[in-house]
Image 1 (cartoon, rainbow over the protein chains, first blue to last red):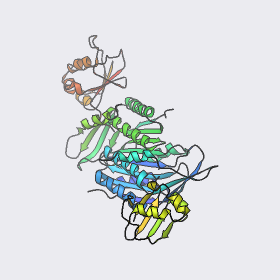
Image 2: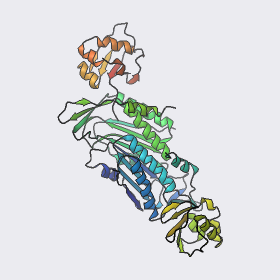
Image 3: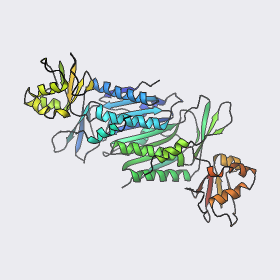
Image 4: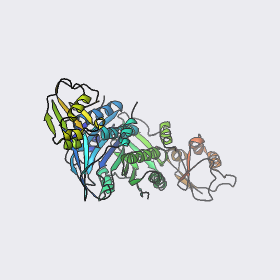
Length: 153
Length: 153
Length: 83
Length: 83
């Protein structure tokens, strides 16, 4: 039976260790846990913050659909996705994916798949606030679209 | 310049959050952190513990060579590998890989590569202690060899 | 019909949402984008490159060829940049 | 020459390490495995499927065709199962 993904869209930070612990505590069937943490990276030393706008309701629904597809496609024992919104400073967390499974390749592939689809399908938009320049929306890249194509069957 | 991997071979447990924190604290150039945690999985409810034998000296050296190759091959901002030895109970941690980079694909690929090579090249051997049966060495699988072939260039 | 806008689509149109009664000849997403673009300068600028605009109907992505629903929420936004 | 053994190779040979003086005709890893297998039942059992035995010289994996070093540490062990 497919695991039920845990999806959260929130302004506050998340705690990596607690999320992994939640997925393994008291279990003996988890052999592999892969986590992906996406952080706010400074583009050239002038970034003051990213502002992440999102579409409330759809953000949860769309991440839920992507996570549900991953849970159907791979035999996962657990799957958590947390995506933050609002103002985020360089070095701070933006997104977390935790995928747990019996076997390592399963956990790797599911986490990798999740991130590729989150990038291009989850309704979030980044705006950069940088010293000495106007606010600017981050452009989507062709690379992000290509990454998603990797998972076609 | 390639990052200098942090390699540890130890009997004691590791703390995932502390290892990730060490790689990101005070930095603004890390956009992605992928972690892989390998745990002792129970094979059918009878496993009491795994006993991990290792070759001291060579374990560190060989993991160092694999990590060094990853650091040459991908532009990582940080790479940590911790492998435990000794008696490990079901549900407990065995191995941790943390790969940090500017971009997500880099971090995913490096962590994935590391695990494939650790499985087949790092000098560790697992023995199972299970209720009601003789101790048994775990067999290497053809799958592990195949996984390593994925990274041929 | 409730329309909601995000990111630079929202900024260019100048509001985040509005209730609109669509004329009966506007039946598809593409027709909606064309019709909206004539409502004023903000709309025209926001929807200038209509093919780049992403559309969701009741929280689900749809193609520009999709028929509009009887009612519900239609969202227009730029390509997503989360993750 | 120092020989070290791990996992079931160690268990079957019955010791984890030993100092051995090799005869001059034993020049390669493969020759070493063949020569050791004749030292007794434990060795014979441990090295029965010689092709499966992994060998490291001074902490580095080597092929069975590799020449033995002048001195140092030679390790024999089964395929690895870490990670």
